[in-house]
Length: 69
Image (cartoon, rainbow, N blue to C red; front, top):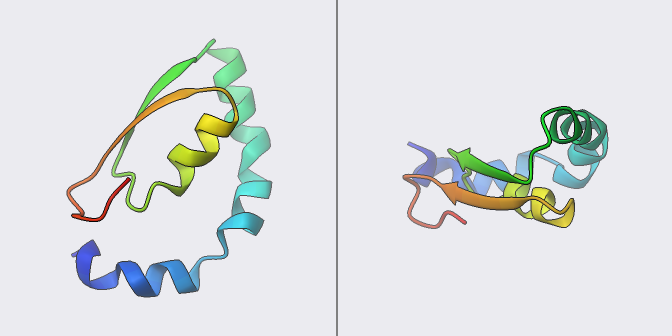
C-alpha cells in the first residue's frame, strides 16, 4: 500500500517541522531507557532512522516498501 502512496506522503508531511517537535520526546525515551540501539520497524523512507542516527543511536530500519531506508 505504501508503495503507491510514498511520493505523495513525502510531499504532505513537513518532516523538519515535525521532527523538531518530536525530538525532545525521543531524547527522553532514549535517555530513560539508556537506548543506544533500536529497531525501526515500518521505517518507510527512513526519516526517523536518519534522525535517530544523528542523535547517536544505532538504528536498523526495516520496511516492506521497496525503496525503504
